[in-house]
Amino acid sequence: MCRRSHVGAVGADPATPCGTAYPRRVSWDQDTADAPSAVPSPVRGGAQIAVAMAVMNIATYGYTILAARVLGPEQYGGVAAVMNLLLVVSVIALALQATAARRISADAAHVDQIERGILRVSWQAALAAGAVLLVLTPVIERVLRLESFWTALLVALTAIPLTVMGGQAGVLQGERRWAALGAVYVAAGVPRLALGVALLVWSPSEFSAVLAVSVGCVFPVVVGWWALRHEREPGAVADRHSGRAILTESLANSQTLLAFFALSNLDIVVARNVLTPHDSGLYAGGLILTKAMLFLPQFVVVVAFPAMAREGQRDSALVRSITAIGVLGTVGTVACWLLPEVALVFIGGQEFAEITGQLWLFALLGTVLAMVQLLVYAVLARQGRRSSLLIWAALLAMVAAGATAGSVTELVVRVIVVDAILLALLLGLTARLVRRDRTLARS
Image (cartoon, rainbow, N blue to C red; front, side, top):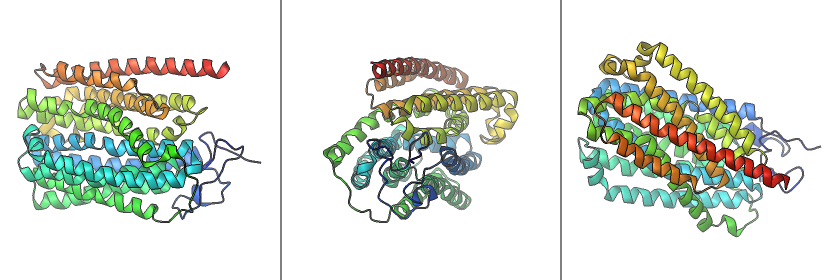
């Protein structure tokens, strides 16, 4: 008798009663390396990804604190601007990851074709992105007000491994190979911290801080290559999974994710242009807490996304996920409100003491953005398109509202209001789609 977990059996073909197993490959994830009838536990998978992403985020967070402490508000402001730009650039990688995970989860019978297509398109996109950013290096240097041309050049070099990692991670996510995916995430954080300590001790500068990030991005690509190194047995081929189709979906996903990441990261660019260098550095320090609150529940999105891509599982997965993110965010925000001095330690110490009373606002901003991010991925899972217009509109509203802000507090409050309105609109739109799908299912 066939058994399935509520997130679906690995390699299960929804067209058959018990599913069709993925072609076997050597795997680090015992859930997918056992007999074809093995079913991955969502609890076990969630725990594996939670631990791996916790390690990645702690290492990344530790490096961010180190850079903030060593460089101080003014120099760290430049590093923070570069990091936010790289997060915007990473939408290409995240779009490829979402495309791979959705297609493999929804159509396991063609996993071999999807994997080969995703990896090929990932390298093509990586080289194209690197070339474009290379041409834009002088613009990046000027807009972000960086100390040197070479720091801006690192953005182009970093884009290549960053993009390739996205395609690799998407294949592993779609197959629910949580241990291997977890290893990729760990490799994305720990080497950065180790390199950052060495480089900042050797030369405490904006360039050294960004160089550690650039070199660190190579490590997860090597781990991803190792996890995916074995050849699959040739599988079925379908036109809907051609390279052109994968690229088209990835481009559509990119514009949605670009809107979200621009919304969640370009406020530092606004701060760099409307506030003094000192105040923009303080704002960048507060954003360390915002990013921590945004990334803290990210494992929820990673584990839930394959389920949100499957009919019959997406609604319950969305409800559970947004509840979990809401609880985690509320706890974190209240903690920052009650214990601001403790929170201050985690953003760089007394050099950022002027924003101690506003730290709970930055935590609240991160919580709102985390919930918006989940809803954005729910849109991608449904292959929706119109919702992205709301995100672009919110971005324009954020820039317009922030352009006249005169202080750190005023800017963060305005950004929160814009993001909260977007969250309410996306929740309303999602609820309407859920009701529509249920009505169609009954008819």
